[in-house]
Amino acid sequence: MIKIKKLSCGTTLVMEKTDYVQSAALGIWVKAGAADETDEVSGVSHYIEHMMFKGTDKRTAKEIASDVDKIGGMFNAFTGKEATCYYIKTLSSNIYMGAEIILDMITGSKFDPEEMDKERQVIYEEIKMVKDSPDDDVYDTISELVAGGNPLGRSILGTPESLSGINRDKLTSYLNDKYARDSIVIAVAGNFDEERIIETFEQKLVGLKEHKVTSDVEMLPYSQNFNVKVRDIEQTHICLATPSVSLIDEKYYAFVLMNSILGGSMSSRLFQNIREEKGLAYSVCSMNAFSSYWGFFSIYAGVAHEKAADTIEAIKYELELIKNKGVTDEELAMAKEQVKSSYIFGLENINSRMFSIGKNQLLLNKIFTAEEVLKGFDDVTLDDILEVSAMVGNHTDYCGAAVTGKDFDLEGMVKK
Image (cartoon, rainbow, N blue to C red; front, side, top):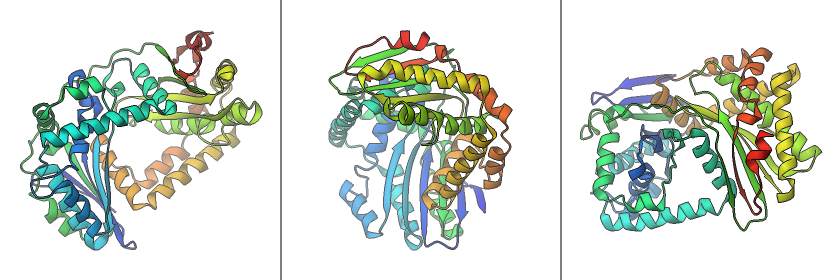
């Protein structure tokens, strides 16, 4: 059973207790990510996440790590477009100490300028690592293209130029504005004492600002863009994308199932046609990227340079086919079983449960029950799939990105 409690400081605590396990997972979710940034401080949310591990008034960076090891914990953090999460999983008896460690990081990090300089170099290397991974680079590129200047297209890592301009004052100013009590959700799943968890957090965040400083989001209209990056690599990586729907859209469930049928599994149409039948690509798939107020649908393929044109033609064929003829009863039934199974498997993992309830409460202010989610998938009809397929079926509307060893006319191939 999920319990939601508003702490006296204004922060929301979400708890889902499972008595039959011997572990617990806890996350502090902050509604601050790349979409909250400006060009001047692009990458600052991710920079802050790194710096949280670099020492507090009570602990050095090494002591943070060793204190987690002393309780047998596994902890980490990640930054996304709309949120940052700091999380830990431990034995049930140790989750309260784990909570104290993360609280110390959130409320007592020093942000030492020397450590900031060191960590800035680490993030520079992280950016280089992405650039050296063409499949990552092409996805980051298409995200920026399809967003067309909107906040959700902003890079999570930032750029070397933006990072070089983020000093301690800019970092802490952003932190103070965004890490506010009303923009934080604490999520706990597993076996734990609910009253003790409440006591652990009740008055610990009062030093943070009460309300997050926000600005209105004005979404720019979609525009088609293309970018081909030529590098000394042996394969061409192609990604096509077009706007879709948000997490709260009524078409969400149909989009998930349509993606599964088109390119979400080894039995999907794209995989079977492009890899198994034609042998054009080793890797080919489609993906949904959902946020609380926007989303996009993308198709990726990694191919030999000389097979780029044939692969794009095969993608266009499958888009036209699903747009005009939809899917079969058998395909829809199989997709429902696949997606529901994946969802249920996630419910059986304590970390996954914490991620789910924390993210949903933070971004949507609603936690969906398992029954609601399963019914959402079960209720999708063939007509629903046809409707969402029509939204993404026009290949001439797609943005396109490629990272390749041989230049080619990607725009011409897509629009043809």
